[in-house]
Amino acid sequence: QVQLQQSGPGLVKPSQTLSLTCAISGDSVFSNSAAWNWIRQSPSRGLEWLGRTYYKSKWYNDYAVSVKSRITITPDTSKNQFSLQLNSVAPEDTAVYYCAREGLAGHWYFDLWGRGTLVTVSS
Amino acid sequence: QSALTQPASVSGSPGQSITISCTGTSSDVGNYDLVSWYQHHPGKAPKLIIYEVSKRPSGVSSRFSASKSGNTASLTISGLQAEDEADYYCCSYAGTTTYLIFGGGTKLTVL
Image (cartoon, rainbow over all chains, first blue to last red; front, side, top):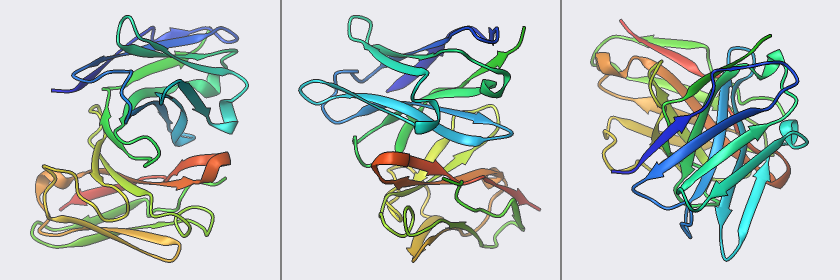
């Protein structure tokens, strides 16, 4: 059974870096078909796609314009996981963060989601 | 780019059918057959129920169906059951600048 297990702190101070990890079981971050995404949900912004990483002979990333200057999504092939780093966070970045698998990269639907991590940005 | 427009709430009685609309623009819903729908019970992981406008993943009930006309996509749930009470979100690809946008979500209440 394919699962995504999220981990990371639930509280981050303003101006610091938000870091979350999504461990993959039952699939591979090296998959030639899938892409690995981060999505967040907040009352003010609803669901917001943040970005993705995927492998097709080499690693690729796509990022949402709204966070492009602050975001990095990185695969960790040794641990079969991928991570999210969001720099210079502000209270507006408070949200539930989900990792999600795009089963067929480029088809833009998410067939598997993590349970979500509530991240609060507060001093 | 603005979120796709969904009604904030819909309701129906058990056994009835309801339809949730999702209105975008010619830059997203109207331009790509890459609309998907998700069911979300609060506190749980969202669940894919429709992809590529009208395709149903394996294991999803045939009571869920969807279509698209112009800039508006629609999700229909027939034979409403109590377990269908959840939030529903649409999502559309929007090109290589915006990539992806979601609807604001619709809360379905089964009366």
